[in-house]
Amino acid sequence: MQDILDEINAELSSRSERGKVATYIPELACIDPDQFAMAVVLADGRTFSAGCADKLFSIQSISKVFTLTIALGKLGDGLWSRVGREPSGDPFNSIVQLEHESGKPRNPFINAGAIAIADAIMMGHQPKETLAEILEFVRFLANDRSIGIDENVARSELLTGHRNASLAHFMASFGRLSHPVEQVLGVYFHHCSISMSCQQLAHAGLFLVADGVNPSSGVKVVSAQRARRINSLMLMCGHYDGSGEFAFRVGLPGKSGVGGGILAIAPGKASIAVWSPGLDTVGNSKLGAEALEMLVKRTGWSIFGN
Ligand code: GLU
Image: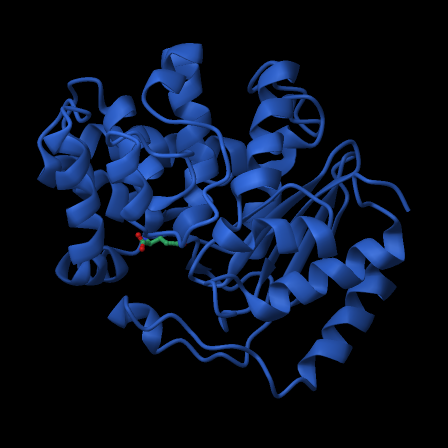
């Protein structure tokens, strides 16, 4: 595994075409695109990495996997009356479908869906309490208490988040939010601004590798059925309107973020985190997807077989 990761790192480090960093969140626009990291945690807990795998980056929409897991824990199947589970085929921040579908977001991973999830998990609590709960859950999953929120990124998102504010107000106009829009957006922007390294992220994804149980600690995080369902949503919706392409090329459940990270799950085998800040045209890490494609080719880990 270490040889494979070293090869991928060496091959990708010479690439000049690395995509473009997200600029609509000003704080992310100043990240050096020439960075790459990858970490693989096998089901037995052994960890391998390449590149700057301890460097913190903004996990952005990858956090939606964790908030979805919390929401399912709180609401169970009741969650599906608030958010759907179909791929959107639209950009991550699209407002178009919402109008046709009476303010019910297509899935938990597009921005509107994640905003609806943030609202669902607040359950009458203040944004600070909800954020503390999300952060605590992520720290528990990664077994790392140092994980925190980058307040500069959160502030930057808040100042420029007109599109997300529109989505939230639009949903509120259909009576779909139970808390004030500003509070829900505060929770959403802050959980997107969690900073993690590839090492931490790969550890946090481990419960989705082994039927909901963290194989290294033996702790059951969710039921086997729930883990399977979260993985299926990641496969179908985890890369926005690039989800089909990602499934075609990589063949693993995965969730990307505009910070350039991707968390991918090889069920029964490994949790994989990769980071390269340059994005492709639909907002997914360009080299990150390539690295996963190379990894799957060499390991035969695609869920569709070798
Ligand atoms: N916080 C970002 C936004 O709302 C998340 C988008 C992403 O990572 O895809 O625009």
